[in-house]
Structures are given as structure tokens and as C-alpha cells.
Image (cartoon, rainbow, N blue to C red):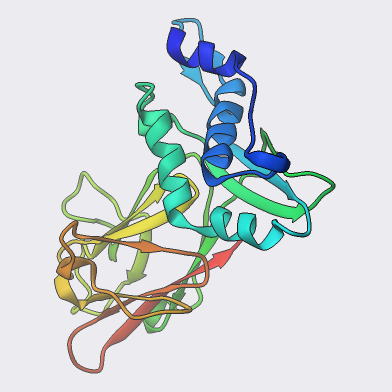
Length: 237
């Protein structure tokens, strides 16, 4: 752990004229998260359940920093640096980015007092309107028909339907990745489609990784190739 302790002691530099570059934002976020870590009785790093990355930006750089904060690649870079310190992905805190106008370009990471991430809302079918709050204490949610995901040992965290036989019991899995989410199709296969609020629909089963990123405002649609449709909408908490 000496390497990251040494890095925490370094000055948080910025690009010329005090403007934050993308690497500055990533590095300052990385260091800020590490500063919030504590050690348990066994010496393991323990992070708070959630953190807020507060980015202040001058008028001339506000839109640029806001774009970087919203870019999944920035989040992926922060996660990669944390994982490179041999920190388990399941131990990382949920992250929420807030970008606002300030006198100077700065990044501050603080513990999130209410780290509820979002709400999953079922649309259609016999479970229409059901809501599932998503907090930071978990990294994976099983989606499917009925109580059981595959057998009597693995339950569904989100029940899409009780009676629609075309909805697979183990339809898909939603995972939390830092401040974002991704969905992996399981038995529902190519009949799982992510419908972004802005952009082209994507099928997780048809991608090389077998997963597709999902953002707040997007919908995950499950269908039978015909008229059957049930969706899961991601809303801000």
C-alpha cells in the first residue's frame, strides 16, 4: 500500500493557468476516494458506502468538466486506478458526480450522506408499477420471472413478472460499476434490449463483452420476439 500512500502526499497539480485536465480530474478523484478509506481490525481498507465527487469549474471550463464527469470513460479510469491498488471491486464506494460553477477548477470527494442510487420501475405485465430502490450496499441484481432466478438457492432481486411464461426466470443481471450500471443478458438472450434515452438500442447478448452500459433514464426491455413487452426503467432516486 506504500505506493498509494506516497501518491496521496503529492501535490494535486493542474494544467497551465490552473485549469483541470482530464488526467487531473481522474487523479484527484482517485486520491480523494483513497483519503476516505479507513482500516478495519484486520488491516483491510474500508470505504464509505457512497461518495460525492464535487467538481467546481470556472465559467470557461464548466461545460468541458461537466462533459468529462458524465463520460463513462472517466469513471472507468478512476475505477481502473483503484483496482490497480489491489482493492476489490465489491469494496469500492458508489460514486455520484456533481459539477457546479466555482471561482476555480477544483475536485473534492466527500462521503455521501444518502447514497441511494436510483429506483428500478417495472413497466407492463402483472408487476406494472413495482418499484425497487437501489442503494450502494450491493453490486448485482438478478432479474427474472417469479421468486427464483435459477433454482431454489438463487432468488430474483427484481421480479419482472409472475405469470408471463415468455419471461425467463433468469432473464438478466444488472451490475453496479462505480457510478454507472451495466446489464448482462442471461436466459432471455437477444430478447433483452437497452433503450437509451438518447441513442441507439443495444442488445447485450450481441456485444463482444455480453454486457451493455445502462444510465439513469434508460429502459431495459424484455420481449418474446412478438408482442410481449415488459420493461425496467431506471429513475433517479
